[in-house]
Image (cartoon, rainbow over all chains, first blue to last red; front, side, top):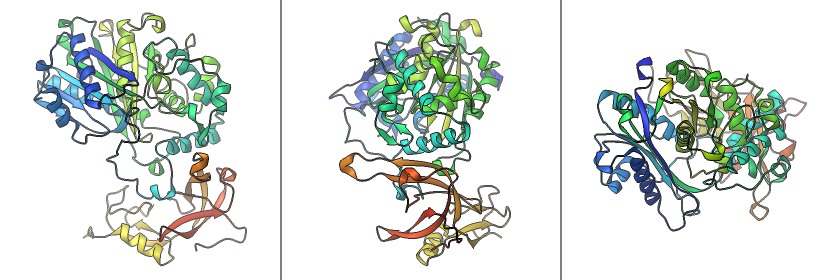
Length: 382
Length: 132
């Protein structure tokens, strides 16, 4: 498996229309991101022969996207694992590049979820033996996990709030972030309860936005204008789909996806300079810090306390502001990877983590269901 | 030979309509499984029998859904671990939704919603409790 270490590299990355993009379609947003990422890589649309994408609304995503972009990919994959999809697509993209099934892989995503509110449809069947009880998806599933984590480990409401406050602190330094006003623990705790114990400010945003990544084989990475960012390690794992089938609501399959990614990279948690974790809700960040080995199980609440993961803290986590304060256009998995790339390129301005050489980016899908982890590194780590 | 032509989903719902809360016990693993499915998730084996369960259980995790004021009253959604093993989502009723607590002993009853039987729970009665 170690021959996948550095087998691919990200040579183009871009976001588009983060926040509010009234009157724009999801495809327009996606195409803008794809074009910008290809420009960033010094490539053109006509050179794309591998396409990796999924969508909240197009259930044959790569077909719709290839048609819209006017490309005929030799290899494509639209595996739908919820919000983790864009992270999980990096592994098949790497395999396809390594096997020569394609030479330029485009991973892309776009959504107008905020501006199209009320007009969205879901193509997902209701969860069996759950929907009849009226849970609100996805928040109730995460609320149930939070209730269990609080009961089992004494995690507090204040500790959950710390996660939102840290994310906002980073967002304040990101001109692309959607919510940048100061936020305090008291303000989080005073926000409206939605599904106990989670409140509005424990929840990710609903925004528009898109993003794209361009990957090439590792040995070709230096042929492009920007500093390449290598895929050092990758892992994907899932143990359930529905929350009532999750074996232990305090432990996610990130324990497995993370272990795979670390093993492939030959690195561990202590080697990671910056973390970008899918924070659909505040409990996510706490559980992923535990499951990805940054603290022991049950210690996540204490770990995030006292501003420890915010600007100036001991570990930089979600430096773009995360799904909580930067953007969350339906599915967020693309954005932790883009932020990881930008940190390793040194493009992050005020929020730049000094001399970051490694980044851990983590995607979550469904209701803690699908977990996808990647370890990124600069040329010096190869 | 294993029968893989069963209809465990319909069988479960038929039992419920008869006032019976029964779950599959797969022969090879001896494991009780919920929700109903054709193959044992532990062994892949298809041979099962229906076993009545006590309906007694413990709240494993709980939440209160709070609709906006004009959209209805708050209600409970919980995950219940049955004494026999399986976990299921349900609501604990007969008590304020925020009074439902992890570790609380509960017992099942079969209610009706939208003209269908539905498995619900209430705080366990000290006298022992029944399933319907």
